[in-house]
Length: 433
Image: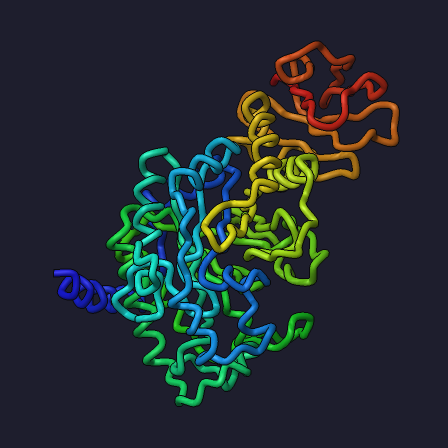
């Protein structure tokens, strides 16, 4: 039955590939919901975690495919617990999870029928995606799926033009038509066998472009995104599509992401694109690595995470914060401790983040503003240089969120707040409209 459904969906989707993409009402509603949720958990995990050196270990250590695949018979994440993962996200104030279904090493974290290089062929045998999807539904957390368009394992991926994976020992002839067919079949599985998927988070496009910083960042192959995106929207029209290609959005995409940078910044040299009118998302790590790295102890403090989250919200963006669980499947306690602190802050102050958009002032050295239909929220990370700060708009009063009044003066076009007694850090000033 699954094979018949798969063939039917593949054939049907061809009819919509060439059509101009017009998001459905359900998709537009999903975009609004996505913007309101503001905070998500990114999970980088898979067979690469066994080597405890990040998810790029196969490429960075120049490990050949024949040697890397020996990991298959040793992968047994005995402490994997989908309920615990989802509870960590929920207790941290996160509203959605993006799970790595397949990273650049090509290993599939679900029971795919398209490849033997998958988690159900390890001694563990379990379909972790199935368990995670069920738990997300149970706990009311939305589930999105990361999917790599780049593959260091398969012979048919066009490695000749790729920038990475050149030392994997593959000798077969690349064939993008074959590889595209494989990706479509896998995406169809993901979108038909695991319930409602909030978004597909693509990565790997940049492997086929010139080095970052080069003005010409056009792709060396035709990815045929019209076909890929058309397939996704034909199966689940509300499913949002984003692509970490470091370019302006491509037709068919529903949100725009920024890697390791807040929109409008390019501190890490990856975010060349400008912020579009689509929903925005910043993805960042708690330490320096995406996947589990044994020696990476540069953990972000709760204050840094708080400022990242609020800084994103003040720029009209979400924060997708990453954890790289250990090979056992357990999330590091150092991650969980910091996430829990931010979760407690959101319990008391979430109204200044959830459901907001960027406020009346663009981001400042001292912090940011956020806004909803009834209030403007002033988040002060640092003391302003001036004795007072002017917030444009019409307001009735100002106070610390859920607290005491703030010294302020109503003026013609806004409110002037006296800085001397203004609290800094995690306290929020609320201006009632």
